[in-house]
Image 1 (cartoon, one colour):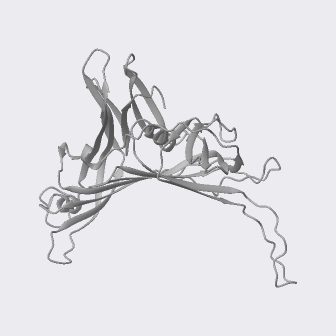
Image 2: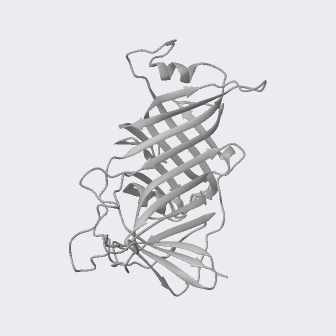
Image 3: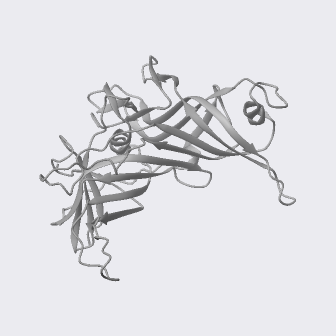
Length: 340
């Protein structure tokens, strides 16, 4: 039985690549649609056979995060990557991943999905639009990626080479707010959207006219939600707009948030160790809503939601130097992949 997901980066939207980067997943789903066009006729109550219309395919991948291969999908989502070497002998590298701005374009991928011993469903020209990253107490760090593609097809099964499972549990992470770890956070969700418009991808042309021609990007959006043990009014004050605020102000208060996770230990060639690392920087978070419901005689939990806006993320590299990224989000990843 062969069940797998593998991706390969394409040179352009239409040219299929070889999927050779395997990802361990919890689930995958695709939804091809033929877009059949049914003519509206007044002389019959019944539909006549349609004309083949605008083909589209969308899908999603749900997976527990492991730090050796998650970078491929983060690059697919955000688009910009800067990689450097920490230890060439031990093959330890670091990557800074950030979102593209207008004038850039998201990379396109071929995605291979092995479905038992029946077929490989192949998606060509897949562009990633949305990520939901969840860190919840008592669970593994998990991610859901959503994408749309140019076309799907069936082909021969691959022989998968699946990576070893080095997943990241909740207790390997910290939520750092304004420079201090908040040990009261119980759940944290980040949702990133590229605003890709899959419907505006078609043109009047007889050259593969049923298929999309481009996937234009739109507004980039980063939203956060979190639950925390209710011990003080810090986040209520941030919601009201100022430190020590007890009611709504005309000012807006921002929070600097970093999610920091570590993975397996890595041996350095000169002796000593480091570890895989994933740091997610949200330099300016606005708390848009907050509530502390009382439902029974149990403890109180604060629930908040907010928006990450453009700010300066000072991303710390392995040698202690920093790189400033002007964006709502920036990601630092350390692993043993020389490139993404």
